[in-house]
Image 1: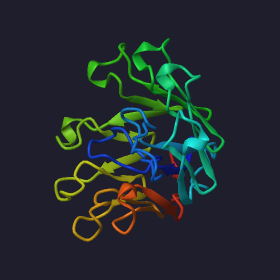
Image 2: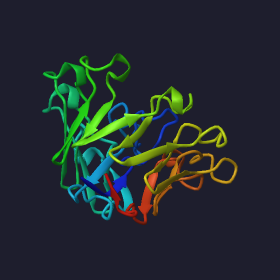
Image 3: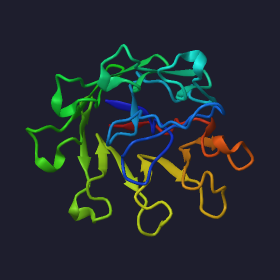
Image 4: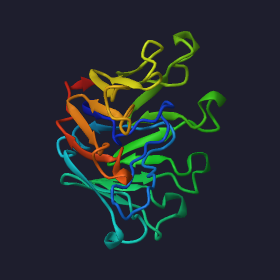
Length: 251
């Protein structure tokens, strides 16, 4: 299975490896509200065989939902450029409420109450099946990402050093690396996905409002509201420029 482009989907990396991503409201009249658009250990989605062609479209100004878009998901990301985001609402299963339903034409589904080991975790992206380790696997793997389509997921272990133990090492043949002890500002954060380098805003040279936030993925640049903008908007995504597309990799 080929990977045409690998995209770290949802913009903000928190310090802990593969924890939840968050995007915040940019509307002045809205309260700041985090959006859980990922599941525990997955912050990225794959553009497999062109089935998830978001990378060339996810470019432009970020807009957020307000009261005119309905009450269920007020404050959540509405669009970036021409790519729209939708969410599960009150008419969906309770465990799916507020989660990403679609990005552009790509649909997202989640494991439900009939899959107790993985309830609420991502099940499909487009036609790509996502699986997770469950009670029938080794205890230390329980709840971790197991496969994406027909591609297995591997993890760093103690032999790779304590810093990376438990983090995703590869999906198929695409390798993940992380910033280590020589990069104190970014230690533990994702450094590269295959040939696509990931960078973050610097301490001391960039605004405190955006320090340590994601700066670039491959050729794409993420821009945030900073100290020159309204206080309630500072640190929130303003726009994305450039393309996430990198050299084609083979899984």
